[in-house]
Length: 240
Image 1: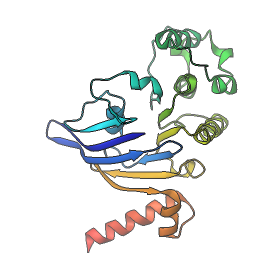
Image 2: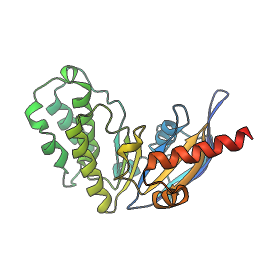
Image 3: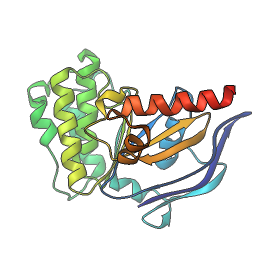
């Protein structure tokens, strides 16, 4: 569904992506993890057409995304921090995005109802807590029933109930055969969600594995422990 071929990106002298090759398929829920500054955000922005790689190519359904924009209609994006006009209300923001998208697609209002956001339609965005702003971002990312969901730290700032509602929704969409990419620092939250995991460091992909294989190789049943074990082994190799 998405093919990333040999992409690299520099900002000045800093090489933030180094010869990245990845394939993402339908029905997968993939965690993209790594320390701050490892290149995760640049990779996501490259997929969205917000950053142009210096070399290499990105294909969406076997077509290059270079110079294209319509493919983005098939992607729902939830940023880590959503920024909206302060004086617009929640209802106005949602209506504005509907008009911009101008689509005949049946809207997916599951999260709108589950988060009970209709009760907050008259509240201005500047009055919302960080968690409620996250709910608005989540609703917008799922609203147009996209084939691909890119969720950047989706549970950051959400209370436990809202976080559980969002996780259940992610699982539901994965089971429909959608491709879901998640970045997260909370590895413990990913155990029930993801099928594959990509670990990035210093602009490179250190590994891309199926979760089942990762757990088998490390003899761990928790993703966080399995990754910690692999990183510890790599560190030991470098020190010896």
